[in-house]
Image (tube, rainbow, N blue to C red; front, side, top):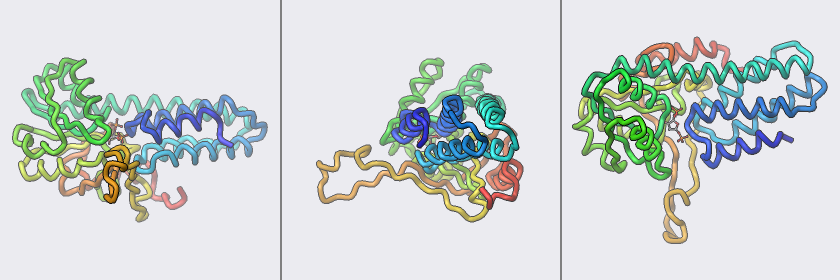
Length: 309
Ligand code: RI2
């Protein structure tokens, strides 16, 4: 039986009331903290078991964003490997969660600082969906006085592009909202494309909101730089041992009312894969790198011994 907080958070993640790869990870960590505070476990073994069950329930909520299992494993691995009493383990869990959240927020800020160096005065930046990492780059550049403009896709079917545009309006950044199918028509106006990531595979392929690979194709054709902004915990360790990133398929009802199209299949994959050949750089909190360096990040972050995960 998992605790109430974990159930609620898992449900909100599944329904996308909590969304965005980084936010999902931090919310899952918060849920583990709440679960720890509510835990009545008297022995270390019972507590670790409880935490493990909570972690499994959270991970099952959404399959494609690796930030979620990476966050849960970061916390549980530390607790599992500590030979402490239940009380001490609970304290350690809370500390580890707080550290994860603090580091994750700092990473977004650092990505903003590093990424802003790649933005020039006058740049027109195209983005897709809503990414906190991307907005950190854009806002930092703007706050540095660079006169930039943003072209944002609406990002059907969930319209996360609207969240992006609202955030840009609040900041006073000039922006244009376009439909997803207008990407190629507007690419000529862009100097750079910057998108976020839900998972980055060992070969540098980026899993991000459906439609991202179309932006990459259009950018490639128009010779526009294609950048990805992502924290290092969005790199997928198991891809190093051959695991494929599962692409989440969401309800058809998000696309159209199936009753109105009886006899037709309605598909709703939430993400697509952009191959490394179409990506110029990945901006992480540790620095800017080509997608081919993904394997080094995975090695540094998770070690080679990923088979045991
Ligand atoms: P940050 C989102 O997924 C988008 O695909 C976005 O690019 C990615 O998470 C990263 O977001 P969804 O939750 O962590 O909207 O940069 O399906 O905020």
